[in-house]
Every structure is written in C-alpha cells, then in structure tokens.
Image 1 (spheres, rainbow, N blue to C red):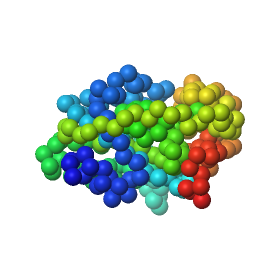
Image 2 (cartoon, rainbow, N blue to C red):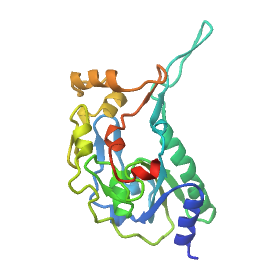
Image 3 (tube, helix red, strand yellow):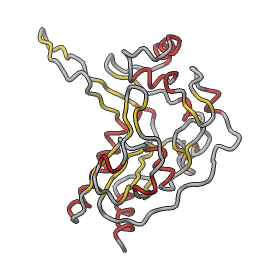
Image 4 (cartoon, rainbow, N blue to C red):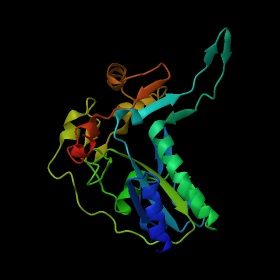
Length: 248
C-alpha cells in the first residue's frame, strides 16, 4: 500500500465519506479572490507554501442541524456582561470536518510532510477537480452517492500523492428543482447571485449590498434556535433528488 492508498483508507476510517486528490497545477484557473464581503478564496500556495498535493475531503451532512451557525455576542451572567470577540463564529459542519481533517494532517506531519487544514481554498470547484462530483445548478458540489448533502474541507500537504481524474458528468441534466425553490430567486442554473442569497444576508448583517426584500425573507424564513444562532438555508439542497434515498 503506497502513501496515497494509505491516506485514502485513513480518511474513510476517520469517518469522512469523500476523498479525492489534486495538486496546485490542477487547481489553476479556479475562482480565487474576494467573495462578496464575507470571504477571500486563497490559492493552495497562499495557504501552504511549497504545497505538493491537495486532498479534498467530505463529511456526510445527514441532518439539517449540521447547518447551525453560532455567532459570538456579549454574554450576560448575573449583572456582569462578558464581552466576546465580535467576529467569532462557529459553523458546526466546518468544526466536524476540520476535526477529522486535522487527524490526517497530523499523521502526514508526523511522517515528515508539512501539512495544513484549509477551508479557504475554493472547496466546491476544487472538489470537482479531485473527482468528487459536479458543481450543480445550485452551485453546490453534487456527489453521485450523497447528492449535495456533503460538507467539504481540504488538507494541503508537501507529500506528493497520486492525483485523481476530474469529474466530467453533469448530474443535474434537465432538473431545475433547486432553481425553482429558492425563495429570493438567488439562483440561476449554475450561478448564484450572492447578494440575493439568504445565507449571505445572514453572514453580512451590516452590509448595504443585500436588497431589502432578501433581508425580509431571511427574517421570516430562517430558523433561529437562539438569539445568537441560525440554521443556514438549505432549500436548494433539500429538494435535490440525487442521493435522497441515502439520507432516508
């Protein structure tokens, strides 16, 4: 068993359901840079200089509560207010995925290959290059087995691993259910108008680039377990028929 086979087996043994490999050359030309006002997509080399291989990994998000996001605020204990970092937040699926990914990065590092975990490279398009599925009409990764019900993370390493072939098939074909169900009309086939997306609205509550009708829809439709948390909108993935039997 070579190192590539060993790492793929270790990934599956860790509880990850998807694992594919590419390299920086294979990820050239992907959309890097600023995404609205909430994120910056970085190249593998920016995340880990001299990186040789990119492992794309996926967890199976079988329950809607994987989509919970908790943002920090001032906690009130008795009469004392305890300030928290204003920009701190946690997305459950990232915390679960990164926890599993770090086990692989640590294993590679102990073998002498510097490695790092990243969610800052363009995960969806990188996953396509790693053979894990296609980017669907909802712009999410669509895997043949799990549909869009996966969440992604990457491990960047200086180990030279065998690369996988990119995914070529369009799994969506004539289906447009995700486009039709979006309440704010943020979706066109294979394209997201990010400023009309309710998730973007939630992630950027103080920006002026989100239309008022989207803000109103977000307030009405988004579930908030507590005043500091919300469930990301998942309508466009809930209606996807691919992989639905897997989660039933």
